[in-house]
Length: 181
Ligand SMILES: [Zn+2]
Image (cartoon, rainbow, N blue to C red):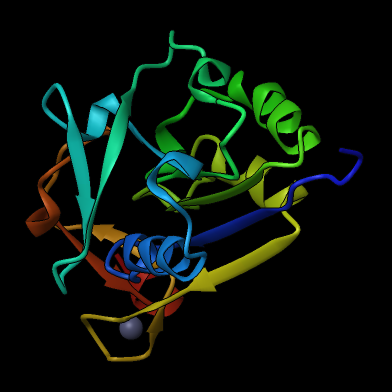
């Protein structure tokens, strides 16, 4: 068991297809249901059991993760892959746990927003990008001009950073259109 797992990260702005890419990747691994776990931060869901779903209807059960939970408790001898959706909301303290998981030969795939609506580095993502083995930046198309977008622009004036489940309040913007506001 000296082989280390690899870390793959999908990052980008809102509407860039990160969750779809994550689910697609999980599906392509052809794992049995006890060989992978999917974690989603509790800030992103109401309560209880949850699924992540893509627009084309594919779903996977997932664990609703609270920051005080121990990620290692969900790892079993069968686990081959840990998938993390909306990873920007995870506390940076889980980085050391993620490194331990990789050290066990388990792969990790994560997706998340690399920049918040002010264009600042967002939570855990920059650190994950830094030590990822495979980094995939996804882009949307700018609502304003149609160019490739890597920023998330907030259409409403609200200073609360986390405005989850209100995707109608955001739109993808290219750097030029983002900075013009
Ligand atoms: Zn634009």
